[in-house]
Image (cartoon, rainbow over all chains, first blue to last red; front, side, top):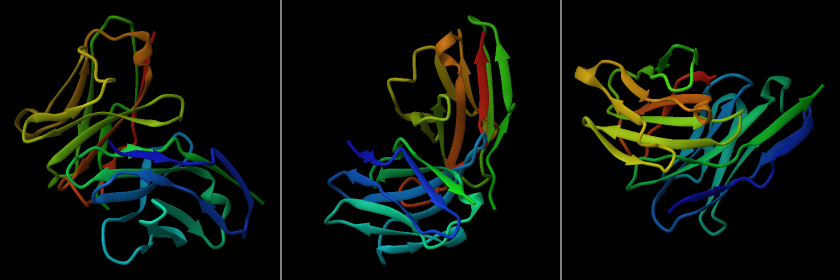
Length: 113
Length: 114
């Protein structure tokens, strides 16, 4: 069984600040990790994914994430946030044998001007 | 980019009635999913579907729920009969293969059972 933990329910930053959203997972085998963004009242938009290869993956709009097998983590980072980055961010995990994405509870990011 | 379309965007229905939520997945995708989200909270997996069959379903996928994709048309979620606790936003998703590929989500259908 795979599980996903997002330790921060809410994060508030100022425009131009950097942000790191934490995601930890538990699963013993090969794993597929991804991040999605959900703006208020909208659907999920894909940001980035990791399955194999370079543990640092670049996504859209300046987001990147780093996979760490030793820490069982896949934290999302952005160097300089914009007000439009205010949204809920979901980390998701899928094991390579299955076809079910398991989501974390989400981290709500508020970017203040 | 590829889009998953969901029809309708909103649906209000009387408790006990039947409702069908429609999803038009990305055209060359083979795997289909339904997720449920209550009040902007956690996305909960309901079911996945491949080659005309349900592959996996969660405890949230009650006996009143069913899915199908007749003749490669819409991928549908039917709830019959509906209950008040079925009120939520239902998201459809699709992917080209199972493992390691991006899953594309629709914008969701907000279902309100009154």
